[in-house]
Length: 141
Image 1 (cartoon, one colour):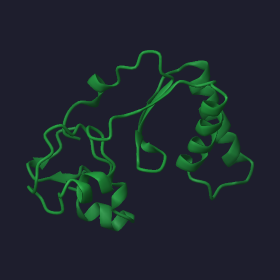
Image 2: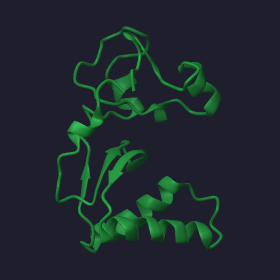
Image 3: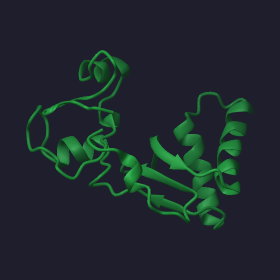
Image 4: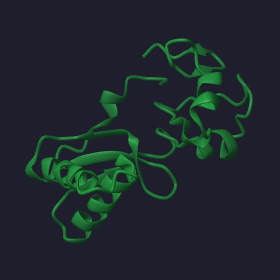
């Protein structure tokens, strides 16, 4: 993280605000309000997992239910601004940031390392506390 993200969750009528990963909502970073719709979303996603589909990730289950609820107009969704909350490919490849210190992102609030595949690879760009190393140092959050 580059900045405190709480200042950017401004959609007071939204049930959920979630990072966009280029294809779907990214459950690696989102906020859900304790509304009936927000609770229903998570209860239904949990039911998918409990019904034996344990190979489904939380992201796939939540996105599946979220898409149904959006289509039925039973949940208010807002995707976070991809320039402030970029997914990994948008930050690294599109932003031209392949090496530390290269093309600093002054508007970024949080970057999700979903672009880097595998736990070992993600840990190789993190400090011992799991914070992603940045060109300007370690994230304070």
